[in-house]
Image 1: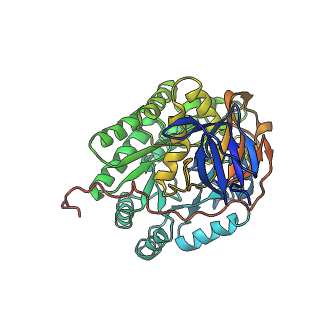
Image 2 (image 1 turned 180 degrees about the vertical axis):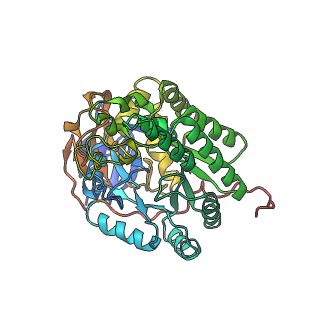
Image 3 (image 1 turned 60 degrees about the horizontal axis):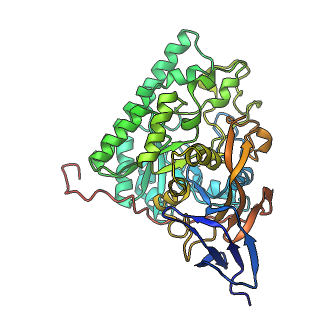
Length: 478
């Protein structure tokens, strides 16, 4: 009987802490040995000339999350996780959205039914709290956190998702008590409504004006308000998809005061700008997401945030819609106003290549920082460590063999998502995932799918070590 099922040999192993040359011994889906040389009678995977890194974890993706208005997301769990795997990811955490007027527990069951038997990668769920009723806050949410759904997202904008200030405080209070981690979409609803109506009266309704309706002060104000509420309740929060220097300044201020405020940025805020929304014939709709892409100064600020450690995680916010579809970006027709264009862009497949090329390849990030931002910190932040996010004895053998020298021009033809375009069309990158292992099984072999739908497993998550309050003395708000 072979001591190992598989040995990954001759690779340069990269973790969030170290870079080393060693073999990796895998047995029953777990890493059981790390050594300079491992002998085996089992299978050998030669990783010569390749970086061997933990499989990517994308903790912010939207899959099969259709709207009440007839909008249909371009990815189901089969295509979404296939695209993730081709991008070097082995775990994704999409959202189970609670529609207003519905049970949160029932919403979770709905998403389980959509995902069951469809996933190529492992997966878990964040919750989206859209209707924080007494039943939800008093019974359903605490029970779900205990069941392993240890993070949830709240919105400060969108008609069908926004929570008012009192509701935010109530949800934050439950999160503090249950030690759940709250993700916050920080944009001010009333300011966006005011600006949108003013732009409509002026006839400025092309996709570009989506960015004008959500300027940087809208994000800055909401970020500061979310931080203030978190301080009042004494609860850690994660500000997601941060796009601007002003919002970063608020987060830095909070962190400098010892507040447990964490932050995430995404691919689009390093590579796209508001000018991309100016395309003719509704082409700009392909880039409509929220917050919108900003400008070069904002890109530089996001890079500084990644380099300084202000951002804990780097995600894609993959939220795909088809462009030429009556249920997608053009659901209101060829010349619809920007406010009717579904918010979101595809990106799970290119998150790792773009950050590697623009970050590691251009000297902005070290290999260890790359691994931390794309895998290890996600596992730690969302209760998946030590099983996920590292190359260590006992961890799942989720690995990506990476060709650091391969040059690729990103095109839609290369993508495996359900969308009919990529917003990164024509972008040249250096560094590409070649082979992907999920729990020791090769699911992508030199760019060819070898895994199948159903290989992915649902992951129950533990309480995040980052979700505990700061431990200060009780205040008048306790």
